[in-house]
Amino acid sequence: MLRHSVSLVAVVTSLAIVIPAYREGSRIGGVVDGIPRQIPGVENLRVIVVDDGSPDDTAKAADRPGVTVLRHRVNLGVGAALRTGTEAAIRLGADIVVHMDADGQHPPADLVRLVQPLFEGADAVTAVRTFRRPMPWMLIFGNRVLTLATKALFGVNNPDTQCAYRAFWAHCWPSLAWQSTDYAFASEMLIRAKMHGVRWQTVPIATIYLDRFKGTGVGDGVHIFRSLITWRLAR
Amino acid sequence: MEAGPLVSLIQVAVCVFALAMGYLSYLGFRRRQFGFAGLLFWQVTWIGLTIVSLVPQPFRSLIQPLKVARLMDLVVIAGMLALGAITYRTYAVVQQLRRQLEDSVRREALRDLPN
Image (cartoon, rainbow over all chains, first blue to last red; front, side):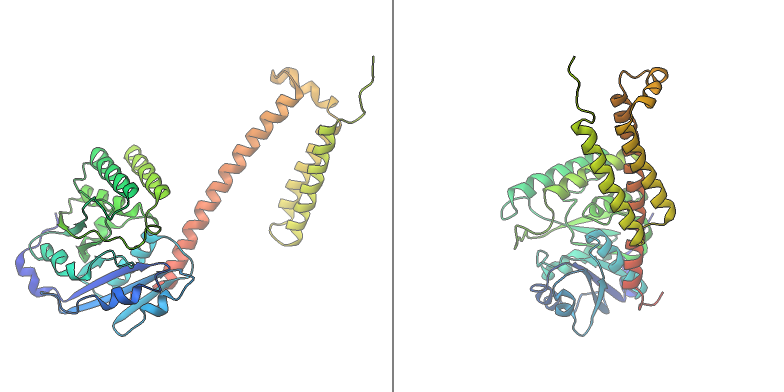
């Protein structure tokens, strides 16, 4: 349903990078500074950081010229923060929305490669990590189980359903708009995309893990799996 | 035949529990956590529990028509039904509040952006 052609490159004027951040005061500045200011085919690049109720100075650390900092007064979860950021990006006129983690897991240098398939006809692109070290063993196992479950239950053929580095055309948003406020949003988004015929492509990226104790945990994995079962039964 | 104590330990425990809960309900009312209707509901509940515990005889007549073996079984069944209803109600309210909180927080975060 959602088709583009190479000629659309000419009308792309704005790309917004949405970064959900919770207790990332020590890293968010470096991540924002590492984002390239020039991307082929993009005239205007905007960075939106959503501080998801952090008790530290995350919002202050991200605040610099050219960066829009939004703040949740209370911690709602990564899904809610990305939803807020995505809506902000669209209100600010973004043609392309990019999601990126705040902890440095996603190399900003890969941004150009990530968005390239959008100019070649894709509706959306997700990065794909390699399931091997330095990713913790438990996460390798969890990611594999969730990816297999998403494929078995919904036919979503994405090798890394939980990777949060993604880009999509802003007009795909109604087909992707998720309700989950937590980590389950990534699976929900892919399932909605499948239902609405959004064409996804994948781009391999390096696997970087800087902190073993942040991000998706065992409890989150169990919750995502339970959500997958619930959505399947509800369909 | 040896006579047992007039009031058993479990009856005393139930009375102390009901008394404490009655006081907490009163405090909740004074702190405006709920209104007079809430206070009335909870005080009737705790007083009813105390009466059933201290004077069980009149309630034994309910056992036969309801086909339960003992009064204790009836109290446990009623308690479980009440617990189920309260749990459901609490779940529904928490979900509703969570949704309202999310909407409110997100709306505030987006407040200064163009529509």
